[in-house]
Image 1 (spheres, one colour):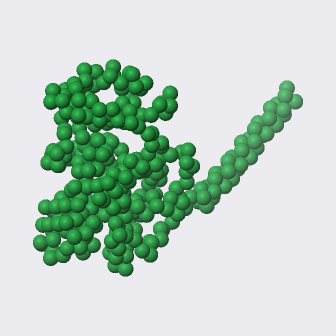
Image 2 (cartoon, helix red, strand yellow; image 1 turned 180 degrees about the vertical axis):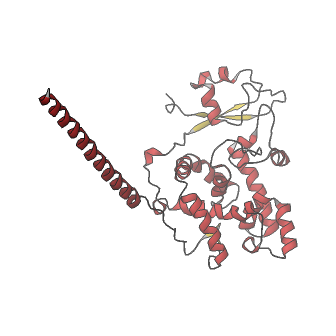
Image 3 (tube, helix red, strand yellow; image 1 turned 60 degrees about the horizontal axis):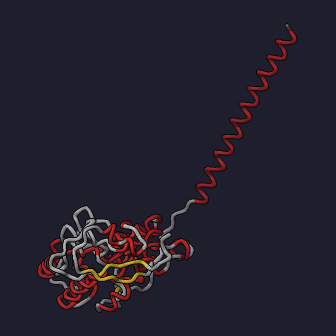
Length: 306
């Protein structure tokens, strides 16, 4: 009994020692991990570019207010890494479509970054109802001749929406004199910008005191342009195969009512979901077209959807 007691006591002591050793080891591991996290995780201030322009118009970066406003948008957008990577992925898909349209309709290439700032190249509507890549409100779309009803919403038609965006922006450029002011008016409206010009006796965007959203708007576009033009500089790393594809399509003309798009699309070897991916402006499963209007349906080339 005494021997067994001694053995039991020895086991208990060993157990206590083992627990103590484990506790020390855990504490040392935690300390190493904490040091590793501190050493590995760093947030850096970002250098402000020496020169920047929007659509060829220089940004007055010698002005401390301008530098601070640009710095804010660079920090917000560069350190929102998940969103940034999505922008690069989507841009590979949509920029090849947007860039030739901008050229066709007479807008500087930099306006593709305005589309990014508006919608993040996503067809989801905003909380206030702005829709499509260019984020038109319904009233604005109707005013500029887009068809918007239960069956068709041309705000989601990239070519037609780009044409309308170009018309709006060129009118604003003629009204205010610069592409920078035209971009600001896309956010605040022509009336809103005109009101502030009259009140403040200033005609340059960078000299106007504007509401928070419009005050940040052009700088957000500038930050997006800078980051997307220099991905590695801002820590974005990806391979070509990580990016989303621009799927080539061909057009099929329709000038009759369509009772069921899901049936109509079968001979083209795709389903209704794929039809909607390439034609998000089709808003229902059928089309009322009593007037015989011509619509052009984008059909993906064979071999991309298995």
